[in-house]
Length: 134
Ligand code: THU
Image (cartoon, rainbow, N blue to C red; front, side):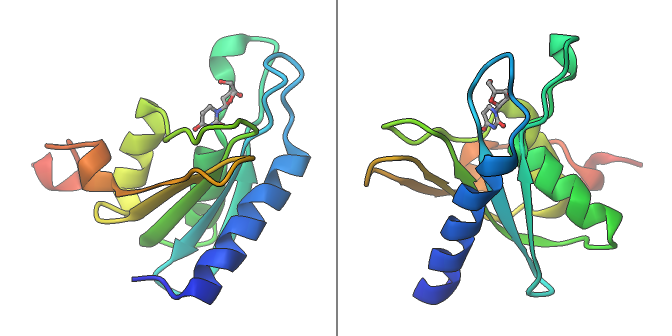
């Protein structure tokens, strides 16, 4: 369970992260903030590429940044999209969240009051993860 203060600061961080989005192709700036079990917060934005298939989502940017500093456990993910309805993470991001946050809270916010609050197991049931390997 996240405190109201923690949630507000994660939401503000996700919105702010979208300002650094490199999205000249989609023109769809997304921001994410993740809370690690260590208590540290990491942010990310989508980073696109002229070879469109190489675009990286905001959630994965944040998670890879955290992992690259040694973090291995994610408690919560907040994703901001510049829309009037909230969007939940894409399938690739759900799989990447599962690696470090199989029980993570996932919150989607947008430019309207509507929001989604769910969990990774609800978004990715019967996930394939580290426990499935030999
Ligand atoms: N995108 C994200 O960064 N996160 C999401 O949850 C949905 C999609 C990005 C990928 C691409 O740069 C742009 O939004 C349009 O799909």
